[in-house]
Length: 251
Image (cartoon, rainbow, N blue to C red):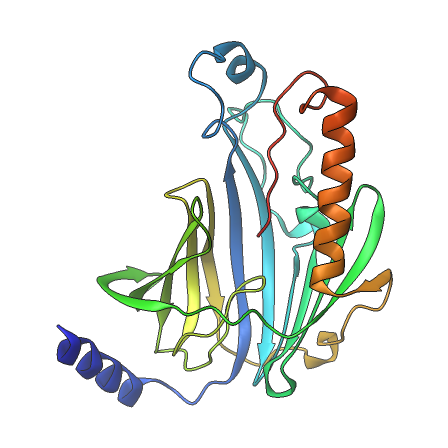
């Protein structure tokens, strides 16, 4: 199998175009019900199962910018859509998150809102030790291969990448595989990030500018701020917010 995967990578690389720029639209989808206790049907009746946010990733060479799609660019809402948060509103500031990367300079700037404060989390891209698996599938006509990473004892990532787009990048803060990442699945559907449209043509590279508004912190400093705030809220409200279990998204 090892030699089969290597051969596939080689053959796909031979057929890959020299395209180094483009735009990929991703859908981030959160299964809100997944971590609710089985006996909390009352909560399920009050909230939709999924929260989705549309993002776009503009890339050119080693630079990329991952940002929410503009409201007017989103498809119309179906009349069957269950009530929930307004479109564009995500959990934990996801819908306002902007991630700039310059892989050649080993730089990532993650701009996000947390508790109504804007932060610029600046550092190097996460070095994940991906393990390429045996799985293969098609996403939007691109042949993808599977890779796995164990974050901790309770969190597992499965990424699907395509060597046909020969850039070692991906959505949000995911990268580090021999090809573009088109899907990331956290804990078997708890959260998915999936490419829904790929445009490999000339892009406006003037948008590839690092965000600069907010308090600049390191990833370690931001994690400490977040942990302290969650502890504070837990102490004040008995480990819950508004009497309900709060889902904390670390990715």
